[in-house]
Image 1 (tube, protein in one colour):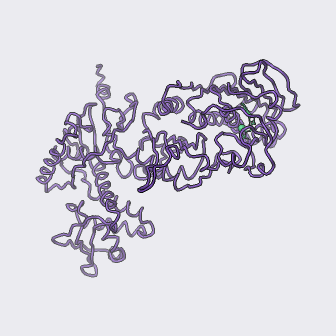
Image 2: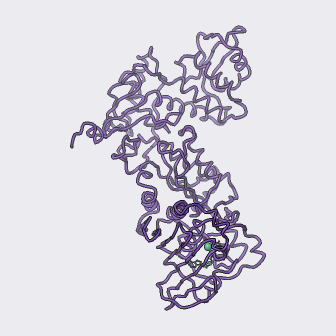
Image 3: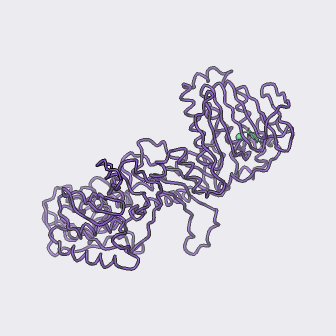
Length: 617
Ligand SMILES: Nc1ncnc2c1ncn2[C@@H]1O[C@H](COP(=O)(O)OP(=O)(O)OP(=O)(O)O)[C@@H](O)[C@H]1O
Ligand SMILES: [Mg+2]
């Protein structure tokens, strides 16, 4: 579990040696009330608290009081609590290089005490008395309280009115304080949190039962803090690196990425539900956010922002937390390793088609009252059926294909028709949608979007299936070349990018100065309109420099080709063709989204259908 969750051993607070002090990232610790809340809750967690309450007045400007039931501070240690560079958490450079507590600088309380009126009330369990330390006068006196600690911070920036002026309205400062507690709460479902403002309870998150598994505890906390929708619309992630070929397996806890990633449908206009943690510490880190965003590249369109809560667990010696005064940034020893881990973790979770988890209620549902409750993808690799591009003139071929598909499906591991996740096809409407019936009710599929994704994934697989040979798509020469009138740009592109085109399985050569001829096309798209395919690929090449961005260009070209090859609207499909498409979706990665991030299918449950007709069941 969380390495920070282990019971703390109380040590005396001591002043750090000066050579160590000079190593610690210096700078402004307190910017606003939320910074104080963050530091005090950090301290409570380091003290092993299981219940933490935060009380605020005037958005935290007039009062912040954080109370915990942690280990407490002994009377002999208390006078050191407000001293600069005095800490119980590290004592050597070696400790600084593998920090496993939230605090380590011995700086926070001193910084807070220098800009506000502070007091600490604390009692260690084995001592009969609690003590109060006045931060202004240094006076220490016995008081009554249960074991644990309360830190009171009054009148923030009272002596620096210029800085106080920079604070926003109480409501805004309160919102920042709530956000700060939320970030802690998501990382620590094993701790109960409550937040009060002006005597009113604003938020309360109960600690989960100690028996709950970490994943179940996280789900409960995510649901409490971010809402049940977050769980319904996300997928659980748990990733550890496998040993590279010829390598010994890595230590089981060397690196782990777990948490939940939101479905592409749940993406938002703002990046306000992206939570990244490193060893339990909330961080803002470009490596992590870039890796996460990267995992959505193929399934999220435009500026939409994915939602996620991702927890990276890594050997503390492999991450430097001492780079920013507020500890919100970290530096990884090997950022490529971390990037890869986060990207893979999210990417693998998103790749599994959710149709394979039929009955798990993670389908992209319509409406909210039928909101799914669990979203564990049950994707298992199945022998993929062959589903070639549909062609209106070759329905008999499709019939054969379907025969083959049906034969495949009767293989022992294939589910019987009544268990087909996307159901059996019933009809097509307006040449755009396929209607199918499954155990939950009605399934509606956007046939072009779905087919486009299937082709795209097939093309990508073909491209990368043989890494030893130079990457290229299997190509099929045309019996009769297809000439077409070409613009000067098209002719230039065909000549300049002959190699790229060849790698894509396309052969386009000059026929006359103003005519090009398509001589070969990728086998996957052999039945499509060769000229239209050639034109769209040449147009794509004209827009992007294929050589400079090989990977991206490849994906874009393949996407263009897939879009081109996918069944067009108004194409009449037979029922077997529709079924073949549904079966193919069930085994295709990322088939829940088209290449532009739109959903490819929706589920209407029986309850929703009944609702449409006001039919009580
Ligand atoms: N709630 C608490 N319960 C028990 N001990 C505490 C608590 N808050 C502070 N302390 C003690 O006071 C010391 C000073 O706290 P402070 O927050 O200033 O420094 P730190 O947590 O060690 O490092 P940092 O400046 O990085 O937060 C801590 O090392 C700890 O021993
Ligand atoms: Mg601290």
